[in-house]
Image (cartoon, rainbow, N blue to C red; front, side):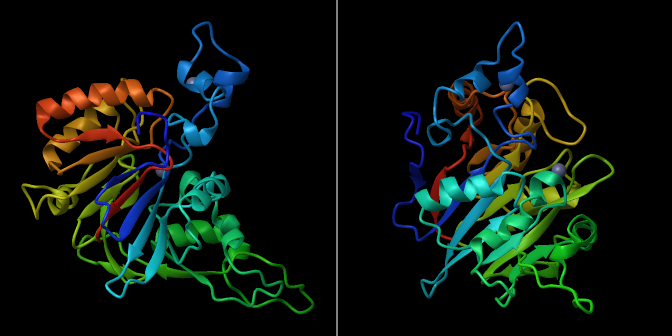
Length: 321
Ligand SMILES: [Zn+2]
Ligand SMILES: [Zn+2]
């Protein structure tokens, strides 16, 4: 991967399922336009580098955090499940669905209702069959009641309703909402794969969801977290229910702290407590330089005995689920 070959695959080559990191950046995405149009006296090397390389060759080009799960069932049928559809969803589809031959989305799961997790909902129609009369199977979308209410306010036209007399049909994304609970004890099944909700604090006034999934490989995905409630941490910890194979975890800034996200020192601290077999970081700002900081992390990993790296957009990992 460090050779600039982007879509390179890691993991078990014989595995039939895979994870594709569609986005690994913060809400603003990287590069930051301000770093490019109004450079400061000490220019931002990470954002400036983005102009010299196309996004698919640049691990510092980070869209909104989102994960695509290509789940191959025991019957060898592939289902494509996406976690979060943010502001950069269309760009991510164009760049990575083509490269990784992802032909469709079967289901959507939402972690929460912030802009960087849901503003791509309108564009779900771009991956749905065309019907001017909306006469297609709706896309199942799994979300909390709180997210549902927020979406009904932000996108009233994406919530199914009867047309008023004389109202014209307009083509919009066809979605079917399925409510999930913010409770580790209330797993739900999406396209044949079971997910356990992992409620986490995303700021002390807000609950977001991570998810634990996979039987053959146990994956914990937590994209937006500032603090782990004890019950949630227990479910994914080596000292609790059991060690996960891969922890995908939020990491916003490198040195500063933040009230609604973990930052580098807190993320590493959480990884040490949870003790997964391996961890990948997501949600990074332009604070992080992919190559430089992965060298720092390689050193940390040797010391602590847990391999940890920054993920990057387009990263594909083969594994069995
Ligand atoms: Zn920058
Ligand atoms: Zn958020």
